[in-house]
Length: 370
Image 1 (cartoon, rainbow, N blue to C red):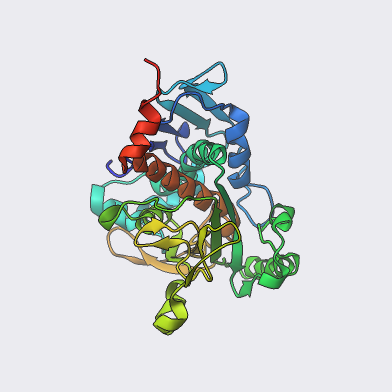
Image 2 (cartoon, rainbow, N blue to C red):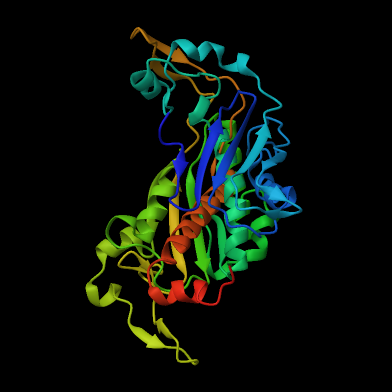
């Protein structure tokens, strides 16, 4: 299967299926000397693991990571890093019936159309469980960014019709509620809304927002490898994401140029900055030194207990009720996935940027010892 790798210099390849023996990732291009242990990775995986609240699937998995290679005496060696999480609580019998029909909103039909065959146990490679490898690799990328003074804050902006208030924004609240919303009042309303969805055997979508600070200006390659294009590709590669925007995003279509342009100025230290940030921290495909702000729209969980209409593989129409353990909302567990994909994109482009100027190369090599 093509398409399981991401990156040019800092490159990852995820592997495994939802109901196989395990899932994981191989990271190539990580520099030597980065302090790294299982705990660094586990805290990211714990944010996406199932069974943490009534708003996520009851599938019980510890999602315990194992480092198989690339680490010696607590530091990266510069060789490929292989990370594995074993599947412990598969219930493949829950999916045996769907082998004969196509679930609405899933990749069942398209897998059959492409390969003439599919792993129907939980969706195989198209399962949300594949994101474990992304998050594990994202934890490593995030540690690299941390060493460089770059931070990423990711949270739930909305669930269904409930949106956070910017006036009540509290970053400390993000991990204080099961929905990862930085607004306690909005989180309470969203939980009420989700309870109604659960009672109706239905699900909800939402929006995830990501704010990146500390990025130097000039990161991103022009034309095809723009920073915003790279972020869009990475975020859209997440199965549940159906929309993506940076800065003012789609709202820019309703603005005039005089309203949407960000005037340049200098701060108290004489550093170049902008008076506004409608661009979302990216101009011409490169970071402009401001906060990078983007949003991802996440669709409702397609597996719902309500009766739905579909067809069997032979075209016979049927009514179905999907069994199994499913999230009534994907958004909270997808927050760390979005954050991880952003981190992976940033690290790869930061590494690529090292060859963009001669003075960067001379700083690295002029005084280096053999």
